[in-house]
Amino acid sequence: MCRHIAYLGSEVRLGALLVDPPFGLVRQAWAPRRQRHGTINADGFGVGWYASGDPLPARYRHDRPLWADASFQDLARVVRSTAMLAAVRDGTPGLPYGEATCAPFATGRWLFSHNGAIPRWTELAAALGPAELAGLAAPTDSAVLWALLGPRLVAGDPPADAVAETVAMAAPYGGRLNLLLGDGRQIVATAWGDSLCWRAVGSGTVVASEPFDDEAGWHEVPDRHLLHATPDGVRTIALEG
Image 1 (tube, rainbow, N blue to C red):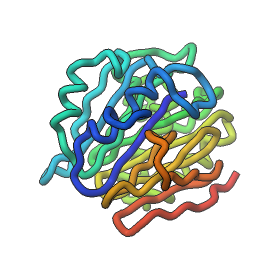
Image 2 (cartoon, rainbow, N blue to C red):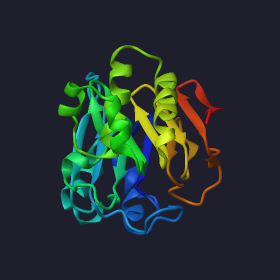
Image 3 (cartoon, helix red, strand yellow):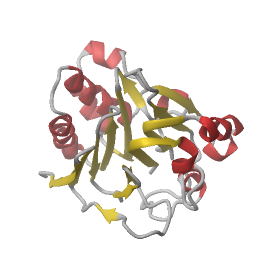
Image 4 (tube, rainbow, N blue to C red):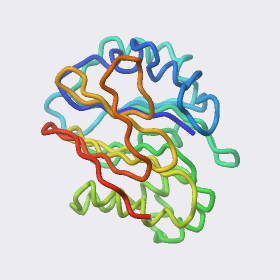
């Protein structure tokens, strides 16, 4: 369920990453090629990006399908950024819909997306305290994951370690845990139950659920592995579990 993508590198138009490619996120909303669960991602979308001189990201989210939002097309045509994270949603049956359920979620400089589903997510939510439960962005498995991960990042935990520990905590409750995290300076992602790949694009790096074109250079991330991309390069490590 869902498709997501992140970019880090030299300044580029959002549309060059999300709209212009032949199999970009707009097309993945209605015709994903490698999605293993679900067939269409029409339950909302979101994009977050960073402007020069401001460490906090801007977000544009909506509960309509990405292809139906004319305002997004205009925004993507003119907005440029050195880092962004975007997602389209295929809602899990039984969970609510609406803008608040759409990634990216945000805390401080961090943007977060979850591609997957946790069947026993309400049991996982028991690990949260009353304040965290009351502050959930939405009553969904993705929001619970963010409530577990976000405070670790705010506390200063290394992002790759925080993501790996969150996956390890959630894994016993079943499901798929493809996470995507960025702060404008790095990208952390996991492959756990669905597809994930990356490619060098010009002087930047794209990390995505699936390739947005058929050009050479895409690398598949093995299942149950974590990817960490910085301006210095990309590394992958195996996850336990």
